Length: 241
Ligand SMILES: [Zn+2]
Image 1 (spheres, rainbow, N blue to C red):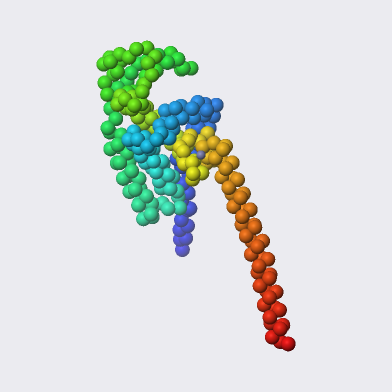
Image 2: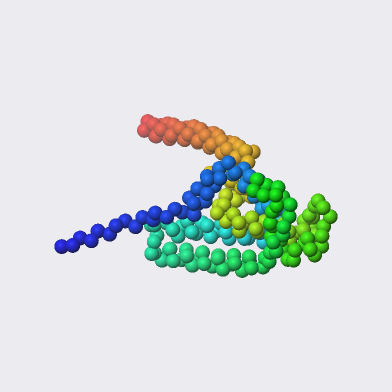
């Protein structure tokens, strides 16, 4: 008799979150730099008052997050080969099509500019449309205004570029856990749920005051219950007499 013991199908492949965590851990000393760039290029735009640019970038961000979460679920060994797994993959495919359609509207031109970093004296950025240095040279040091069509396009492109270049870190771009806040932030640690200490403390305080209310309610409830029981006992005794 042959007993075919089916080996447990355990997936050795790390999840997307594990890979991303590792890539962030590798650059541990640079996490602050990554976070400050994310704040400047993406988070500040996501947290703007509602406008078309912020709306488009937010949608791309949400689709990236959804694709990441689906990939984590799809690769889980416990659902390999099930109908649920296929449904998740189909959902992810729909998201990828949607994402690619949205990204296809960005046409970028490489632009050479001065920018001293630890790696180089210059940087290559990718801007919307034709090269602005050639088309309309700007005076040195002029600030870019979001409230002009070119300015808005500049900020939108920069935010989308941050996303496509840092796709492994999108799971760190989150919304504050405190419902009354809901602001976007870049999580410096994997477990960070709040945009900052004030929101974390206020939620903790609210949790405490809820517990306090519940304790008071239970104290009153138990006292009233004891009184009801006592009354019932007294009545029962009275009837016996
Ligand atoms: Zn917050």
